Amino acid sequence: MQSPRGEAPPRAAIEARGLVKTYPAPGKTRVSALDGLTLSVPRGTIFALVGPNGAGKTTTVKILTTLATPDAGTAAIDGIDVIAAPARARRVIGVVGQRSGADPAATGRENLILQGHLYGMATKTAKARADELLDRFLLTEAAGRFVRTYSGGMQRRLDVALGLVHQPRVLFLDEPTTGLDPESRTAMWDEITSLATADQVTILLTTHYLDEADKLASQVAIVDKGRVVAEGDPQVLKRELGAESLDDVYLHYAGRRYSDATRLTEVAR
Amino acid sequence: MTTMDLPVRQRPASVPPVISDTWYLTGRKLRALARQPMLLAMGIIQPVIWLFLFGEMFRRIIDIPGFGYQGSYLAYLIPGIVAMNAMSGNMWAGMTMIEEIDRGTLNRFLVTPASRLAIMNASVVEQAVSTTIQTLIIVGLGYAGGARYPGGAAGIVMLVVASIEVGVFWGALSNLTGMLVRVREAIIGVYTFFMLPLMFLSSAFIQPGFLPGWMQAIASRNPLNWEVQIGRSALSAAPDWSAIGVRTGGLAILALIAVAISVRTFRNYAKNV
Image (cartoon, rainbow over all chains, first blue to last red; front, side):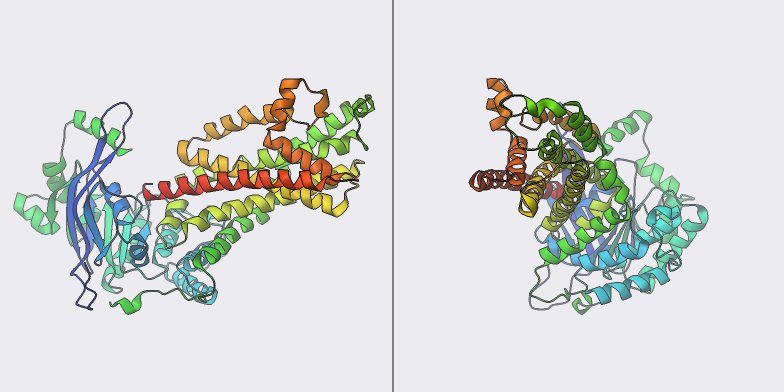
């Protein structure tokens, strides 16, 4: 927790301890989504959460972004307790969800201006910020078009722009490149890297693509059955197991038989 | 980075965030509405078909001794058709809600500091605006078809107010169903279950005195019927203002309760999406 005396803020940008989350299941005991998940993301780094469907990645992101409350455990963003002070936490986080949150019936520019307004910007500031982001994400030409006419890559760029309107210190990207063509995917990787290096934004991303985690992240956490089963620098993780790629590391820690996989898809939702 | 980089609310302190957030979020909805005016027009097609088919088919009904209505049957039908439209038009609110949950738009708003109340307010204001426009179109079409409104502007205003109350009530109920069940069919189910019974258990089509006793008993407690009574009295040459006031107040209370429950449900929803 941040001290009121203006002492240096905590080193970790994201700190989650012992997160437990269960969901009601029809006719039986509650299904466990998180079972004591703990993670710590150093400031200014890119941190990747990987794991099979239903492992608890999205639930973790939901808790850290104030969209869900854990049954037990603590979570803090930049020292702000997200459970006790969600309103304060919302000011420092940016979130790009799995699904595009952009309004398809509005233009890209309108989406961005509204987002600025919701963060309390005056119209003039919101417009200037929208134009800046449209330029940065190569959407200036499409700014006046309805979002429903955008290609998948354009929509994803707009989603990221929407998450950055208020210059967040911590950015959450839930499966940022799922469904993108290879070219858009590479462009998104470059953008994510530059956000972390040039803009000093701490990034937590979830992904199914291990090459993506390997390429982008300085820290990877493999999540399985609601817990972090392995965590560290991807290079170190590989070396420890003498693995060729992160896929082997992943299979070592989170590999499972088919029967397990079907059970987990039930947990997923 | 220091806390200095934190964006601050730059709006004047005199405007509370809930008001400005409501303003901006309502703007989003009304812009979408203005871009697709055909949707508003299409919404009233069915009620208007009822208006003119029933109006023609049962034109002579007002000649029945004891019917006691000064004016055409078309004019008699107007308040009921307005109520029908206010109900059916706003029953779709929950569909939009489900769509925005599925698309992730709602989550995008929920991770911002935007007022939760404002998100629901935007929906209520949009319902009020679209219901007002549709009510005025029905009144206009009725006039073109020969209906006359001796109550004049004041009567039409009261009809609009009552239709907004009905619309907001059903809009909130629809949002509630959407949030709780998250299934489009459930909303259609609620609509089809209530629509015709509520219409026929009222004085929308015929004077209450002609209804069997049990139907009269239900009709007097049917909020949709209150709207019909408000509209019919307000549009007549001699409105009964005290009865109009009581029923308008009753509808306002119902609408407020429905909105309050839906806001509460929404707050709970937002804590665990």
